[in-house]
Amino acid sequence: MAAPAKCFLVTGSPGVGKTTLIAKIVESLKSSNPNLKIQGFFTREMRQGGERVGFEVVTLDGRTAPLASINTSSAESNRWPMVGKYKVDVASFESLALPELQVKEDTDLFVIDEVGKMELFSSLFFPAVLRVLESNKPFLATIPVPKAGRDIPAVARLKNHPGATVFSLTKSNRDAMKDQICSQLAGQLV
Image (tube, one colour):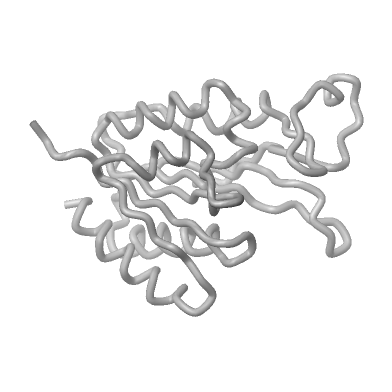
């Protein structure tokens, strides 16, 4: 039986640079191996006038869809779940993110930024993440830091995966962390 897929999880405080780190890792891996097939998505802040007003999902090929916003006031959005002041558009998230988590034979690496509270409002998201893990393909994801010392149950399940390695990102270790993760991932992609 094959060893469990390597599950590389990056955690750190909000704003420390997890998304930027993942983007740099993807860029580095693609530049050293242009034929690498990477699937997944990033979560990016949406800003207006210097203020964060929401988040959007961005696929690796540049397609976008809203994830959450403070500026949503439709009748439908009144039923959307909330995280802090943000209303989470689960249907929009699912329409873009879930196809990126379809396991394909030629995929070399999955990237998910992030497996967090907003994304987990989708009842279809975590089962898709688990299918990716079961595919035995390397997996790179960001996860939130535990609140009050407690992980979100789905995040705890990822952290306890037999092939999981958790990297704690800080402002002082960002550059070294990129090199370390790229090196370990490169060993999985041969």
